Image (tube, rainbow, N blue to C red; front, side, top):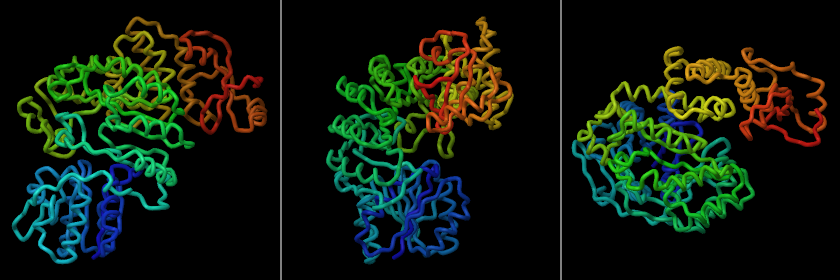
Length: 557
C-alpha cells in the first residue's frame, strides 16, 4: 500500500510535525510512505500533480484553518481523477463535528484528536482488510453512511515518537518539539479548553530530542506546549538549554502567573537570543477576562510581566485579542496602552477567531458576536464593537506591525513617543494615514521611513510639541543604517558629511571586517542611553554585513 502524507503549511519555513509523527508511528508497518510538504502559497494544480504522480492508494491531509478550503478542493479533484484513492483527514479543523465534515468533504476517513495510534490501527485494518469499527478515534464513510467510532484514550507522552529524520536538513526552517500535551486553562476561544489531560514528556527525553534537533541546522526550535511553564521540569529544561553551546533560539508559550523568582534568576543567565517567550495577555480588563474563562487579572501578574521585560537577554512577545465579549473600543484602547507601557519586544494585536467546538462558538449568539463562516472564522462585529471599529483596529495593527514590531524604527520611536501618554492614539492615527494615503498598497523600505518622518512631524506639531527636525532626521538615519545597506541613505534624510571612503577603508583594514562610518550631528548613542539630546559631530562605526555598531576604544576616527 502506498501512502502520501500531504502537508500544506502556512509558510515555507514551517515543518509539519503531525504528519512526521504518523510517518514514524507506521515505520514498522508493511506500507510505503512518502511525505510531501507544500506552502499555502503554492498553486493548487502543482500540489495535485505532485500528489498524484506518486500513485498513492491513500492520501492523508493535515487540516488547519488556513488550508481547509484548499484541502477540500484538492480532495474533490483527486476523487474525480481516481475514485479508488482513499483520503484521510486529521487535525484541529476537522476533529470537532467530524461526521459533518466528512459529509461535506470528498474523503473517506477522519482521525479525531491525537492521531498517532489511531493512524497505525487504521493502516493495519486497511492492509489486512479488517472491519474499521474497532479503530478508536476514527470517523469513516461506508457507502452513503458515516460511522463515528468511540474516542481513543490519551497517549502517554513517551509513546510520541521523535518526529524528524536522522540527518534531516532543517536549515532555514522552524523545528518543533512537544514537552507536554493538554492545557491547565480553559480559555473559551481555544480548542485546548476541552483538553484537561495534562501529560508531560520526561526531562531525559526532552534533552535527547533537543540534542537531535541541534544536528539539523535549524535556528529556531519552537516548543508547541500550550503552557510550557506548567511542566514539572520547566526549570531544569531551561537550565539545560541556557548551558548549551549553540546559537539556536528556543521559543515558548508561557503563563506569567507561573513565573517564579527562581525562574527569573535563572533566565537572567541566558545568552542573549537563546530564549524567547510568547505571553498571551488578551485584555487588561477584568470582566473581559472572566467572560473568556481567564480568572487571573492583568494587574495580578503585572509585577511578573515587568520582571520579564526587564530581562533584556530574553525576547518577549505579548498578545492582545480584539473582539472579545465586553471589550469596547475604549477598553481595548486602554489594554493596548497598558501592555505597550511594558515595552515588550513585540506586541501582537490579534482578532478573535470563533473556532468550531469551542465554548466561544457556543456562546457567540449570547454575546452578539458575528463572525465569518469562512476560515479563519474571524469576528466581524460584536455587541460592543462595530465592523467599522474592528476594521479600524486592523489599520492600527498594520501600523504597529510595520513600525513597532519590525524593530526597524526603535530609535526614532523612542523620540517620537517620549512624552506621549497615549501611544495607542499615535498608532491609530498612523494606521488611518496609511490607509487614506496608500489604501493598503505595500510600501517599500524608503517609503516607510519617509512616511514616519512626515507623519511624526505633523503629529507632534498638532499636539503642541515642537519637534526637532534634526533629531528626528538623525534617529531615522541611525535606524536606516542599522538595518539596511550602508552604501546609501534615502535622499529625504540629510547627511552631515559625505561618505569618507578613505576612512572606511582604513578602519576596515584595522578591524578586519568591512565597516561603514557615518557622521551624525548629535550623539545618537548618548540619546539612546540617557535620553539626553547632545548636539555634536559624532561618528558611528557599523559592521557593514550585520549592521552591528562597533564600539572599540582603540578606534581613532
